[in-house]
Image (cartoon, rainbow, N blue to C red; front, top):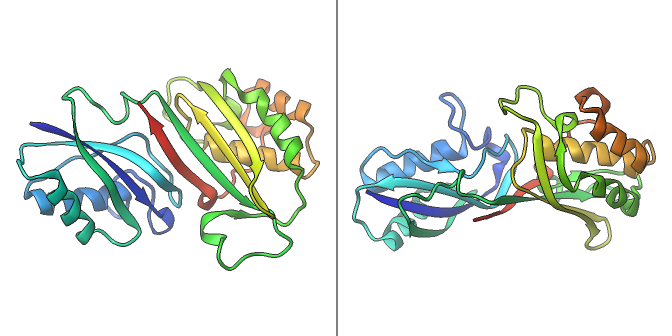
Length: 245
């Protein structure tokens, strides 16, 4: 058996997330169907993590095992010819037998795009959270630094989470302006809880518009109570940027 590692990019708008569902279209479901056609065998794919409905990926990593001897260049080319235009396999390589897309990962990096313009954009709505309140980016960045390190992130954990613990380690978190109107948040952690990034962003939004101070934000973290945090930011601004091994 060969262990095949691949990197896939996708626009998650039309999908109910990564994980396979019987009734609804998902990224995993589409990939497994098309790979099965190319290899002429049923194939189960494992991703580095499960992105939610509407969330995108620049570099999601996944793997599958196969007895097929087809060249990977042929498999990748054939797969991209069958996939819809909003899913693209960027790279496909043979990995060691013990490689696991999820358990071998050392950290994940997510990026959140926030469009803070005076008027909505007809172009960016599919890939960003469009906010018309004037936000204080420096204040948001200051508040976010309290998340760096090992903490209990129960205040930012989505309902329905199946994680055994809500403790996670955030390695870095930056909030920067790119061009007029854009606020870009980058967060790297060893692992994430369900809706963790979106709940953090919804709470930082309160800081940015002046409804919460950086000290209040730290108090939310320390409360370990989801009811103390802000809203869940919409999914379309969130991208899985990179997985490190």
